[in-house]
Amino acid sequence: MRKDTLAALNEARRAGRAVVRAFDLASGEEILIDPSNPSCELEQAAATAARADRSGPVEIVGRQWFLSVHNPPLDMAIIGAVHITQPLAQMAMLAGYGVRIIDPRTAFATPERFPGLTLTHDWPDEALDKAPLGRRSALIALTHDPKLDDPALTVALRSPCFYIGALGSKKTHAARLARLRQHGFTDREFGRIHGPIGLAIGARSPAEIAVSILAQVTERLRMDGDGAPSPSVRESE
Image (cartoon, rainbow, N blue to C red; front, side):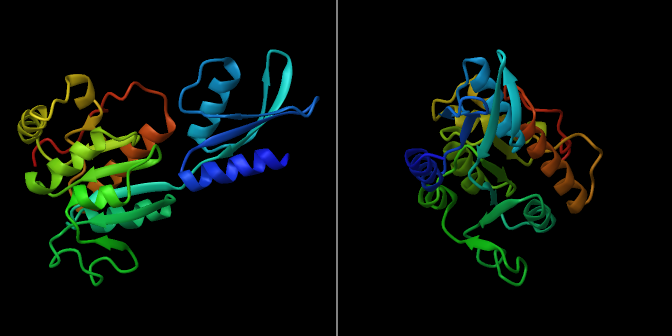
């Protein structure tokens, strides 16, 4: 690996940007690719590898390349230290996410309820300003409180995060979108919000709802799509 390539990879890591190193196995040529906006066939292959977190060989127009994926860590920001948050945070950590729980209500966001997890008692917009959402971030809003969920969703819609989800019924979600529309968001932007949150698997308990949420987050992370929400489960909250 060339010194300038190593320097560029280190810079991308510090900035939290995904990079794919494409190495021609025959000629030794190497190219650094930003997988966020692919155009040519090699860049599309790099984007697919980055989405799957999977390095490996690929043949493009008769040339053999090895694609090395350098992704920033996965990040999950959960708004609300509620019952669903407890199993969701544990499951997300097992799936490789760095989990942070944001809730200014200190009676809920306690180390006793969330041992070993990062707790932030700032208001959501302030917390997300200090630690911005990136392309490998998922924003989960679970409080049902517009004073907490709405600022977080506003920040998320203006960020490049790959997943946005909000707990609540269809009626609750419609009222939420009416409020957010006052901030100038469009229907296309609202299509990024999975509301009601979670895949439709018939979940009932907090743990089951957590499974449905993490499943939907995984679907958006790993699969192609245009950002439209998958069928949701929590339509009676």
